[in-house]
Image (cartoon, rainbow, N blue to C red):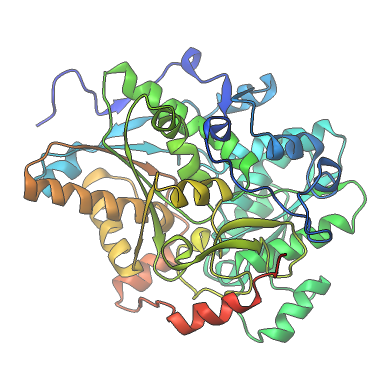
Length: 457
């Protein structure tokens, strides 16, 4: 039964919307390794990074000492269209599982893009507009980021060019059409419109594509057009900074009722939503103020944290982006055509990689059929159809709640529900028809992909 004084949904007022982003790196004792220039193999400079990204975003990317950044007023005004987002107590899921655990989820799907991606998209579009650019280029996996960026660019009347991973382009036509509705030009990747796309197609005929491929194409397109810059929806420190609003709101909502979580769970592809969710809690853990257990959940088909190597690697398949020290499967790793398109990236955020390597965070990988079993259960009892990416976190939240059932422990679990699955019905259809498989790369496949790791002195 519902406990007294704890509502089903905890809302913050408009006045309680965070006015600053939190930069977790400022509190990290072991800072993430610096980005390296692909040309010099030395730490990248602001000038070099500004050739690819907007100058202000490049500054945010390199800043590891400023703990808080004021959110510009124009971004705050846009946030107020859909933020603060609710924190929901999953009473019905708890009852279904018959667990003593208390389960909460932070829902980020209450905007047209259907996901958390809009939090950073509007910020990146704002800084591009402020710099006087004509437009931006980007990649998208499942389509949430491309949708969010097309919305943000439309708001600021800017051109938006999206390279969408081919398998998602074909599986999710309606997501593609939402982007086009907001004025974006959407190209399946790898394509024949860029030199790097042609090279990738020659090396991997018939490939379904990957986020690494699409990144390469988007960067090339930006650098060939005057007045354009590249923007990215995950992985980067700047994106994790913008997404910290998720964790700041979550913590404020929990603090409002004196709730302290034991376990915080998020799906992990490039790492932006997980990093944003855990940021203020991880800050407390690093400063020795509180202790929490953090779990990153990744697909078994693309297991960068759980089976990757911690090393410097290119952030893209075409090897034209800077190098990042991260847990990686190799920049030319081609993941299977899993339905969690947003998690099909070969590497993990350098910040999260450092935290994982320091033992401050755990990681698990899960098969997609088990993920969809959890998604279906959640949809039936909680009333929201979750995105395949988000459902990885749901899977492990359920698993942890069932462990509490076995032990009798009353732990408090918080997970990120990063988006809705209403554009993912092809995946749900495959699951319901028994046509979904669990592809897991072999050790030999991963070893082969890692052969091309850059050789550094």
